[in-house]
Image 1 (tube, rainbow over the protein chains, first blue to last red):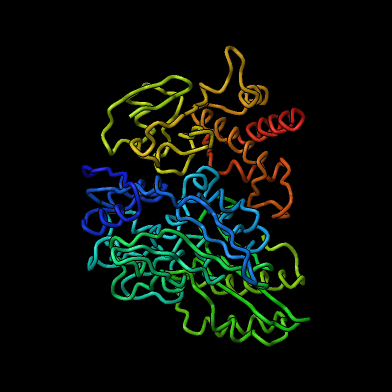
Image 2: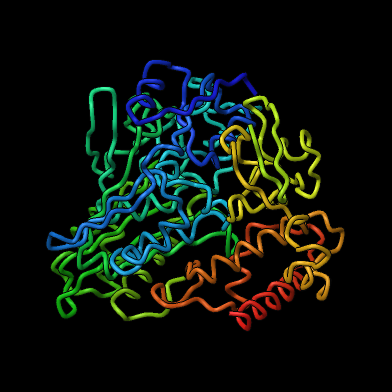
Length: 335
Length: 169
């Protein structure tokens, strides 16, 4: 591991200045992804700016508007956020997604901001003996012709087929979260869909944030759909494994007609995949299994698979249908 | 930096790259915390950090200056074993024993989380109370691997400790 300077800034302005002014500096949150990547030689910062001491560790709930708004500090730990009573009541999909991720220990350590900024990655990214465009731009992609069971099936490029591993991010994509970001020029609000990016020819960039921009929090607004929402995760073992495919779903019905629906997929793409084509196809329609399957098919029109990843398409069709029908009270338990 | 480990205060100089795990084992000689995978996958290095279960291999020591660490060695009082430790003995919750200190710390943390009303992935009603069922305890202990496969005994031990906790409260 490279020699490290460790800094504990007094406030967010000092933190942002320290990282923005040094191309080799990085933020340290809970460390569950970054410390591992330091050991593996995948991350080689010369300076770490620890933000866990900054006052970004509370959940504020504002109830003055029509719907409760939660302002979640970037340092709130995954376990504490999952257990928050307002989240459980008004945005269960977010709580369910957090609880489906990692292990009890890791959820105690990992932060809200850090979870979103963990690296998009595949097995080759973590193996420094193999070419990887994300780790070493221009070196090639080992996953294209190699072990491809976890590969992306939507929005991938010839440069990269890795998927974003966060469960939380899939839920936040579904409920239109806003990411609060501080940079040297002040604060900005980033719609969740604009935070992560597809690989294109720059797979080394996972997000649209500039170097030094700091995620200070996430804002969530409840809705009728978010109160009828859940997260279904399909994986190789019952617990403590990444998603093969996951579905965040939220549904608001008028009798049996879809007033509002939100669908986001994990394990499918380089970023949490908000299925807006499928949502548009379902809005105003009667919610039936056929309607859901037709909508999902439209979303998957541009899917690209190999023999190894082809299983993901029936998996995402079935999991989406099961999730929405469950929410409509027409099927069993989605887990 | 300073660390309070199992009730004893330590002051130690560490390189910024040192993990909390290596600081405990290699610098302070606290060998009750174990190094398994060193990548956050096995749970052998679990301690209670400021009261919550925590992986010491994924933490830099310098980021935890002033922290209070409880390892499996620090759980009991005087000559009395902690109820979770006693339960592991009662049910043979180990074979080689290497993962056991991490399992015990994780179980103590998991039962505290259950008592505080934290839901889990398998909790049926998100807004209801979770019960220490077999399914709940399996899910909550999934971050601790046992290569000997002593899971049947581990599960029985954690169930016993959970039952005692319920009776006591």
